[in-house]
Every structure is written in C-alpha cells, then in structure tokens.
Figure 1 (cartoon, one colour):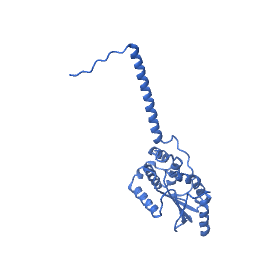
Figure 2 (cartoon, helix red, strand yellow):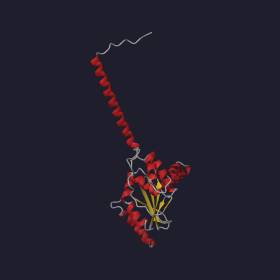
Figure 3 (spheres, one colour):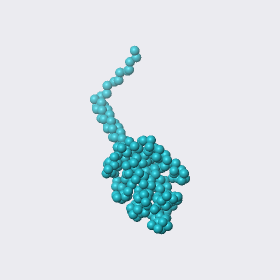
Figure 4 (cartoon, helix red, strand yellow):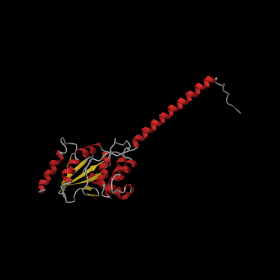
Length: 245
C-alpha cells in the first residue's frame, strides 16, 4: 500500500507565522466574498423606500388602462416599456403638464399600452401594470414604477420592488395583482396590444398617438420635439378648437 511521505515538522516560530498567514488569507477571502455578495444584491434589491411619484392623479377617473373621462373629446394612446429611459423622460417632462391641463379638466383621455421590448423584466413589469388595471390602479402603479426606474436590465424591476410599490397604494390588492399578472388573460391582453402596435407600425417607445374620441389616431413623435410639453399641447389645442371644446 502506497503511503504519503511524512512531512518534517516546522519550527515553532514558523508554525506561528504560517498560522497568522492563514488567518489573514481567510479574512481577505471573507471580505471579498461579502463585497461580491453586496454587489450582486445591489443589482436586484429594491431601495428601502420608494421614490415619490411624478403625476398627481388624485380625483382623476381611472378605468383599466385609461386615465381621464370617457367623454373627453381628445384621446391619446401611449405605448411604453417600464424600463425605457426615453419613456421616463416623457413621463417626467411632458405627462405632468398634460394631466394637469387636459386630463384633469376632462379634455383628454390617455390610454397606456405595454410594449415590452427591452428585456424580460420589461415583460414582468408590463404584466403587473396591466394587472393593476383590473383594479383601476394601472396609472398609480405605472407612475410609481417609472419614478423608481433604474438602468436597463440591471435587475431593479424586481418582485420585491413591485410588491413594495403595490402595498404603498391605498385600496390596491397587490397579491391579487401579482397572481393576475401571470394569468392567460393578461398575457392575451398584452399580446393584443402588441398586435395593435404592429398595426400602427410602432417600432420603438414611447410611441404616442392622438385624435378625436372615436376617430382615427395620428402619430406624435415624442423624440422630435425641442420644446416639450408645448409641442404636445399645440396639436391637442388644435383638436380641441375643431371640436368646439
């Protein structure tokens, strides 16, 4: 039977130095592992407190995916991806003025459709937002998700953040919405919205369309404007004048 060769014992001082070196190496490895774990967690863990929303929605009627009165003379269709940074710019720079000036006064109704094109988290977010519409809280959830947007595909749009946002909305059943988000009904709804986007030749987001209630919709290029929200207000004002509103 072959045996391992016996090692000569280290002097006492040598053994002490070896022990100290071993302890230092273990400590360094532990610190490195903790740092790596922290980096991984920071990419997927939501903030301890969510950022405040951008829109003032109190008192404005919501029904499924729509915001504003069903009798509003002008309608706007908004295709968006919750991870899209340009959508965030539209949400912060333009939407607040449109909501305050036109939606709150009953002149404009906005309808949001999910068009997830950036990554798997976009699909998860769009499904939850659509599910929130079943409780007439789509715009509350959309607004909070956009306010807490992080870098694309970095893990920020996580289940813990979604749950944290949902529980912060009064009267919203976050558990029911999370269950509904994976249902075939919501999947079919988003598939229909995606088909509608294709029919309208949507190739990117945000994609904005507007028109008279019940009439054809016209594309409004959100990326071509130099003075938002005035560039959005002018076509809306023209439509309102043509309807006598």
